[in-house]
Image (cartoon, rainbow, N blue to C red; front, side):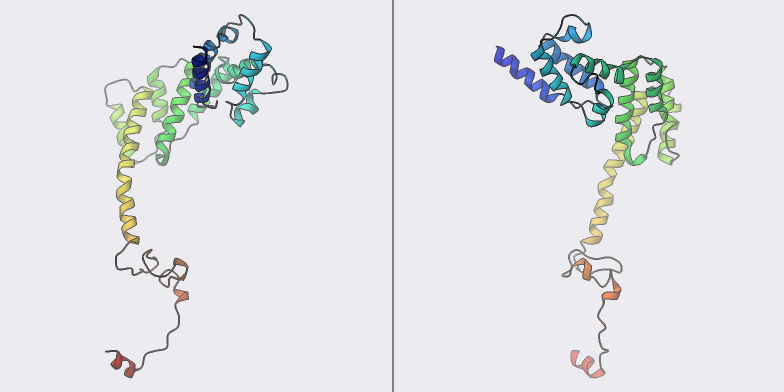
Length: 251
């Protein structure tokens, strides 16, 4: 049974994500499960009990290898580098402190976030991460206010204006997750239409005639791109003019 328990703990440690700005909630949930398996959770969350020297070293090593370089620079210093409880406190203060300065910092992340139609999935991930942080530090704002804060970031394009109008007249609270749902649908529509564009581009370069076109090299041609006359007209050899006799012979 002990070997099974050790195997499960090892698997959980391997599955623990790197701690970054976007993964704190998931990271914290998973590492607390590991602490509970090791029977040391109360030491970190309630300050009850203490760690043996061996356990402290093991947990410190586990945490250190699960921090990305930016997080290490933010939470590790000469005063806590050899004390896992101080490192834990530093991590909580960095990512989940409910003091006013930290709350302002997290709200500013949302306020200054920009939306580009070329990376809607990335925007959705960032917004979800910020919403988790807001919950962690106790930022309580009406969900429709947060929703409209996101809508304000829509670029002034026809497609985004349609989404905004749909939300305005939906008759339901414009929550952040409703806005993100519409954005995801829009991103999916963009992705589904992409192969059509790609197919037309591929067709241009796979003409069965093997002939190159002005300013376009055909990949099926029997010469490399760097020697293509159609692409680089200055490379075309200067052929001598044909004589009338040669034309009659060729015909």
